[in-house]
Image 1 (cartoon, helix red, strand yellow):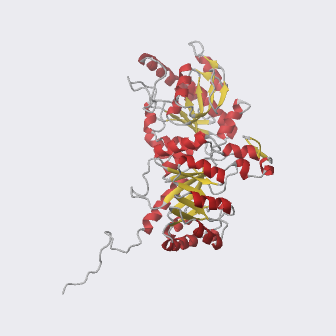
Image 2 (cartoon, helix red, strand yellow; image 1 turned 30 degrees about the vertical axis):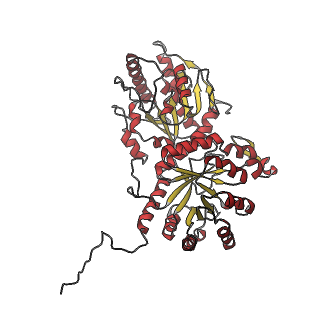
Image 3 (cartoon, one colour; image 1 turned 180 degrees about the vertical axis):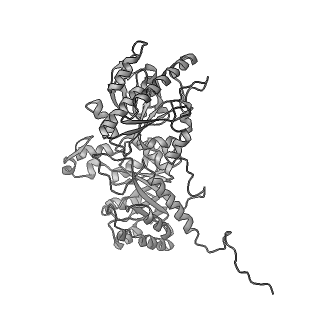
Length: 512
């Protein structure tokens, strides 16, 4: 738990690479924005607006908001509130609520100008104060997008359609009065913040709006159609999340949603039994992280629970994206069988754990993805002799260097696996990209790869040891990677030579 509110805000802000903040309300205009837009930056939600998209910090004080948050499953990482409130596995910071009266409006604006953090009745004022603290922590100006603040009311259409239930109990007249009052304070806040540490951009159709919902989608690259023009994909693209979710379910959800929005076919996670996988001296070694003081405490935090995997399974089904897991030891293998996985991966880090690999070969009959980093042709022969009963064996060329030098990428090995697949029909060639960019993966597709994998992350932190080649899901980099793979698929085309509809003869033979 964070020691202070500033520590809580700092810990959350550290997990994003961008200087972008979304403040999320519940207005109908939020329905026009692709939810994946919110995956790219810190999100501050008001009341129960976390129904619309997962949030990092939710601000509220009313009992009805407490009921709405609980009913929708606590979709924020942390809560700032004056209410008597606890949330399972979430940080809660209690802040004094100052009620708004006709006589105290000037005092609220005075607090705002002074940077004093209170729970205000006009909640976006508190959210803007939190954004100012983020700017101070990061030491640079932040861009704040105000989303879902329509400041208007039409009977029966007060909220986003993603808000399944209204817990406020407010009348139509109550809403009109509140929206009118809020708009006044928002205009006042814009005036105060001119030239400040925040650049506030209202998203909507008001005279003071800076951009429309459609323009916001365009700005974050979410209006683009898949590069394959709806054609079925022959190459599966894997977003390798590793443990870059840090055991944080909301961060995990954002990574999965962003991977799907970028065009990935699967996301991949990792599972290991920490207590048995590492030596006792490794587990007790000092390690600096927000999760404890030892390496063991850090590693335990990164592991997903049974409930977490059930959450992943449901979310991926809802999004229509596949998922599978790198399973590093036998306890984890037995654990994952509960989910009846159609695919498992055996990473190259355990290529010397032959007893475990042999156990998998004898007890798993579906698709095995097996990475071949740090191995030679002797290992290849052993694998081909051992994994004979699985439905499909995906041999994934990899190099364990992060990043992999160009001369060690080994795309030629993918071509070798392609030739082997003619002798072993259950074999499928693949490529795990530990090199920078997309070119190695595109060349692997040309060499016959039918699965490519790229490591991803969600922003940077000051304490996490990311691998250097993980692409940042808060940027367009992973979508660009997927698009280049889809282009490579199209360029490679079919192996059967035939006349295409685009062809014609420039010089035709004369009749007779």
